[in-house]
Amino acid sequence: MAGALALTACGGRSDEAEAEGNTSAPPSASRTAAPSTAAAAKQPITLAFGGDVHFEDHLRARLAQPSTALGPIAKTLRAADLAMVNLETAITTRGTPAPGKQFTFRAPASAFTALKAAGVDVTSMANNHGMDFMETGLRDSLQAIRRTGFPTVGIGRNADEAYRAYRVTVKGNRLAIVGATQVLDDHLIPAWTATDTKGGLASAKNVPRMVRAVREARKGADLVIVHLHWGAELQPCPLPRQKELAKQLIDAGADVIVGGHAHIPLGGGFMEGKYVHYGLGNFVFSSARGQTANSGVLVLRAENGRITAAKWKPARISAGLPRLLTGAAATAELKRYNGLRGCTGLSATP
Image (tube, rainbow, N blue to C red; front, top):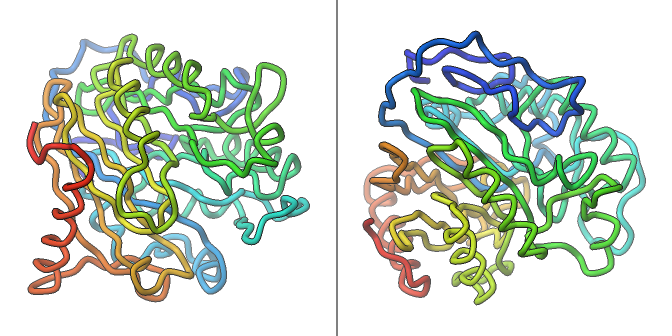
């Protein structure tokens, strides 16, 4: 954790959590902005991103001690000025599993406590497991978000909430973070997609709505981050629709686009000076093994509204938890990871 930053009530390391920030809470539960002061000078900041997180199987027991639930990787997350992961689970202990799904994930609200304790500042729940326990699970998830105040994007009581950016100021940098999913089971799209009149997830399948969300996030922001659930499982190269969407969102004002779903890391790099990462892989994931146990932390450096450097810290998941690699193992995995950029069309440098 950067020493100059205070831990806010919503769990983020920030100078100021802006009142319009989204936690998918109703207006009556909105957070209050910190007292206004002279605008702080922008300082360089580091952003850390981990992949998919759930607390299934043996990982559920770790929530009994949320302060250590994510294990040693927490040190890396806390070292960043802002850290984000994808919470790939419904936050509920009730509900009926979604029909026709082979795997359904859920966790109690202590999952948010565990993320906060590990240094995670914001999460997305826009993914193909965010409503695994249907409407009851959605109501419980939204209630847990409101009760804990944990910054969560991509989910809401309606489309406006689900697509709304979470806004936070970090070392003088005004960040806006949007979450959405391009992956939904076909038979669940109507039930899971947030609309003007029903709750659900922000869908990146609706490209015009997604473009609008990014343009709205751009207003008053120094840096716009878009977190997407996208790609195809176990495919190491991005799909054409991922590349197309990345270009559209960059044109709309995105500075950083990151995400996952493939259960393996994909390549990342620069597109028109903006940073795109097509797949962060699993992160805290009970079933990870073989190639799906390859993991890592993406660390970006931002200066004056631009990403100036990117670093992948390779990790390997053991017993469901990511552990950074060192020595020859880290060197070999980093070389393999850098090779993944070859099919992305992205550049290694800005």
